Length: 115
Image (cartoon, rainbow, N blue to C red; front, side, top):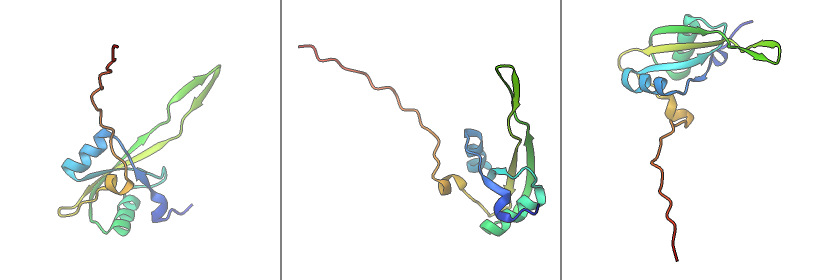
């Protein structure tokens, strides 16, 4: 099975940690295809977004095992890439996807009118 550059990158990981890595260190936290390697991820990013990639780190996350009644089920394998961009390049995938981290607002007090 040959992977194209559109198959390699499946999307950004949307979490608080990923958001902070992107803002502070210009690092991208991406979901990638389980058969993708570092070279494919770097090549796909460079061709899709016209940026230079300095470093790619890969995380393999095994699926969680769950018990339903008396049967075991294992979740899917997830592969994630932490990509460091070269100096002078930046890419903000959070603004492109329209995803925002939820902001907690203070609870409003309920008022009761006594008549």
